[in-house]
Length: 230
Image (tube, rainbow, N blue to C red; front, side, top):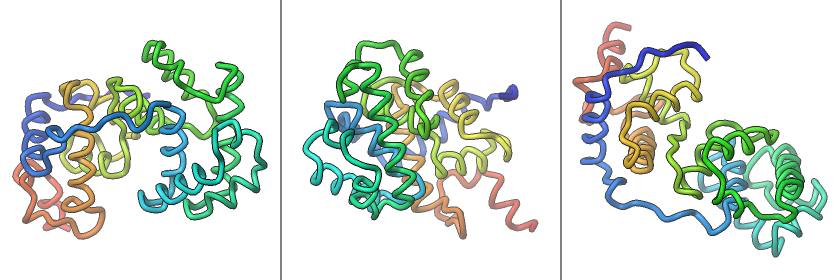
């Protein structure tokens, strides 16, 4: 990972305050997704290469078809793939889910990740990151949403805003952007600011035809000026 020049923390925090004034996700907060981080891990895996609606449909179908993660572990890849078809790339995701179940059982002798609650964050990152198909964003999501640990997941929206606002260079990887944000953002605001950036990316700072005129960050953003010059 190449060294990154960090953006001015005061500037970043000020702009994130602007987003909070628009979207209010810090104030709303969110409880853990479930009592078992394994639910969150599978849900986040199912979100890969699809939207939230299809992810939720696939996860709901999986939970309705199988009574427990032990039952999922005992199913065939084809059985799982048929159930999660709405989430896309079902065969790949089914194989990864079975891989997760195998790795979890090998570590905990049970089909649960509740034991992660007693681990330190670094150990959790290493354990989850070593599972095939589980990338940095998925690890960060489980840490943040299911374990209440400090992490700043970087999806396409967070990456887009970070680059357009000049917090990260165009070629910066999501993992590097996560490191930048976890360094300069207030830890207590990780969850709310992550959600605010996603909401802003979906509704204002879209990949195509962003609504720059409606954006409260436009004066600090290079992207509108770049569009005029192109």
